Image (cartoon, rainbow, N blue to C red):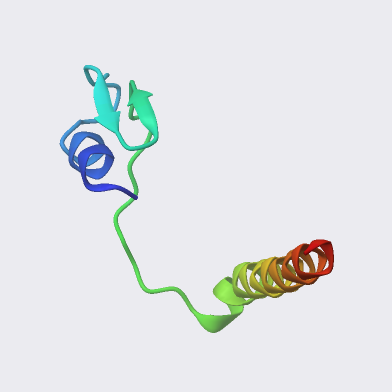
Length: 75
């Protein structure tokens, strides 16, 4: 999360709406709909999310390698 977005989002209370927030990704208006306190989760709770994250990383790496191969063939 980029700093301007994070600062705006975490300064709002539930139900509040931000003004216009500019980031390197564009302009944003943020509305906080819920807030949960941070907590430590068990491995069982995190396992599926970690597996999805790691699978996505592997796919991104494979796609990057494939694209590099295609680009090198083009030269």
